[in-house]
Image (cartoon, rainbow, N blue to C red; front, side):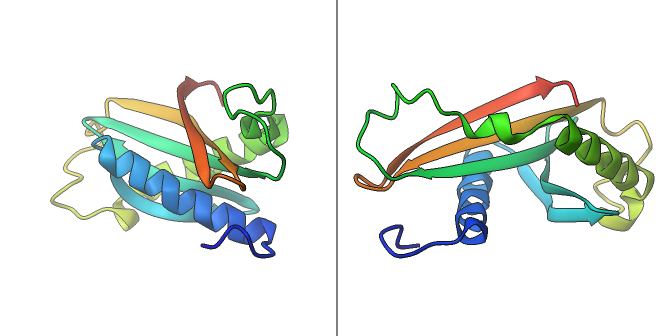
Length: 143
């Protein structure tokens, strides 16, 4: 994606999800599905690592002004408010109740396959001028 051209929120979000998937894969996660939807809720990425199942929300922002990324007080993850958390939790419950529909039988062998469920946020801030960014992975969150 050329971040110097006019971009939409959807384009930024899609780009962020691609970055997040690469990040997760590079850190040993397996992506089960993306953009899982249920009754007005959506989970950006559902992934596994070991015996843990992760429900991941991705928030991406492109910064248009010059300032050190480390000094930036703005955090995209603050946009995951209580309403969004509730929708993610409801969507996760639906996914879990239909897990056999989403996973290969050889991967999912019993209801106790996943020992831990984890809600996570990946926050990405991209600096438009230097085309670099910061990725923050926050897990063990209460949704």
